[in-house]
Length: 175
Image 1 (cartoon, rainbow, N blue to C red):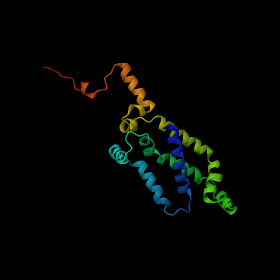
Image 2: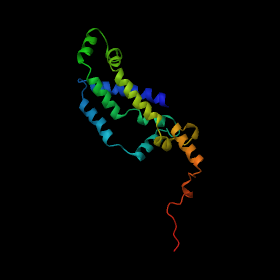
Image 3: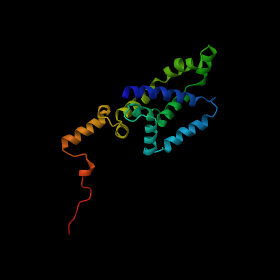
Image 4: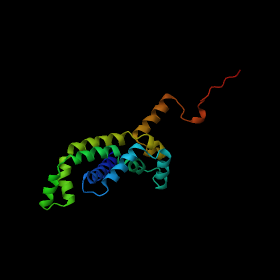
């Protein structure tokens, strides 16, 4: 899950960040506003669960990968790095006959390896530490990530009962 999620996230984030970093993209400001808006205001847990359930991703590892495939924060960092690359490099590559894809893969990506390494590390740690979404979306214990398994080991080894019905939340006082 960590490897596939990191690779998919890096591909999607780098494509979106490169597109939003180009000055000639029409509606670039609107798309940037939408990205920042989603960073400030999220839908919440219940709408996310309903979306994952309606897509049929419950009990699938894709439920842990796809909803967090693009992080707005990481995309903004990468977009700003791409904006720092001079436009003259892109123009000279196009004058030499390079296509848009060629400019991206031959010029932009090799120059942005520090940014790619940093954002890859962010995504890797994020996928490795997946806990809350795994509890929400994965019911099959064979598909749990390591953090959920560690939680189960701690609960079992400490003798705690995870059953909520057996926990006395409010102590009873008999007068």
